[in-house]
Length: 302
Ligand SMILES: [Zn+2]
Image (tube, protein in one colour):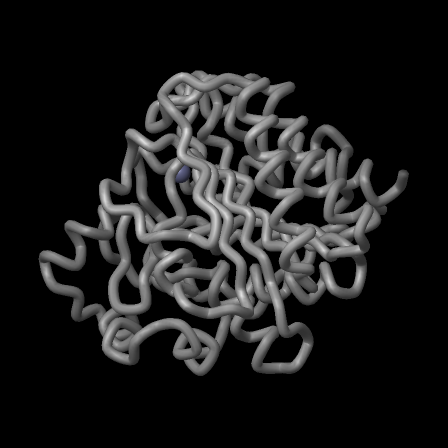
C-alpha cells in the first residue's frame, strides 16, 4: 500500500461533457493509478461532502444558497464558465470534503492527496473560471476552526493566478498565499497574494524552478506554516491549451519535488490538490498528475 491515502470519489466528475475542462480526468487519473499498479483500491478513501457550515467559513450565505437551490443568475453562470447542474454542485461539495480530508490526512501521515480540488478562482460571493467553491480555503478554515492548525501556506503552482484564494486571505496573517503563474493570462485582475511570482510568457523549467525555489524557501523561513496546501496544476506544461509557459514533464516533476520535499524536510505536512490541466492530449495531463503522486510517495519512503 501507499504511505499516504488518495482521496477520491466517482462523483468528482463535474458533468461537463465536451468542455475544455476535462472533468473526467479525476476518474482517468484514478484508473491510471490502478492499472499501472501504483495504487491498489485500498489506497483510495472516499470523502464525505463538506457541510454547509464548512462552506460558510469562507463563502457568503447568498452564494451557498444560490448553488444549493439552483438560483444562479445568467451573469453568475457566465462568470463561472460551466453549465449549472445538480451534479456539478454536489461535485464541488464533495471536492471540498476531499480537500478537508486530504489536509487532515497530511497532518497525520505527512502527505494527503486529493484526486480532485484546487478550485482557486472561487471567491466568497461568486464563482469564476470553472470554480464554484474554493476547497483550498474551506479546508484551511475548517482545520483552523477545529484547532488542528493555526497557520497554513498555500503554494499555488497552477499556471493561472490564484485570485480567489488571494482575495479570501487578504489581510489574514494566519495564511500565507504564494502564487507562481503566467502574468499575461487569466485572470486579468490579480488581487495580491502574500507572494506573487509573475512569469513572462514562455518561461521554461530552469527559470521557473529557480524563481519558485527562491520565493518558496524564503516564505517558509519567514512564515513557518503548520500545513502547506500544494495546488499542483498541470497547466504550466508546454502543450497546455490554456497556458503559455513551457515546462516539460521533468520540469513539472522537479517542481513537485521542490514543493513537497522542501516542506517534508522541515516536517511540514503537505496536502496536495490537482487544479487545472488542459493539455492537447488529455493523457499528458493525467501523466503530470500521476507523476505528482509518485513524487509524494518517494518523498515519504525516502
Ligand atoms: Zn489553471
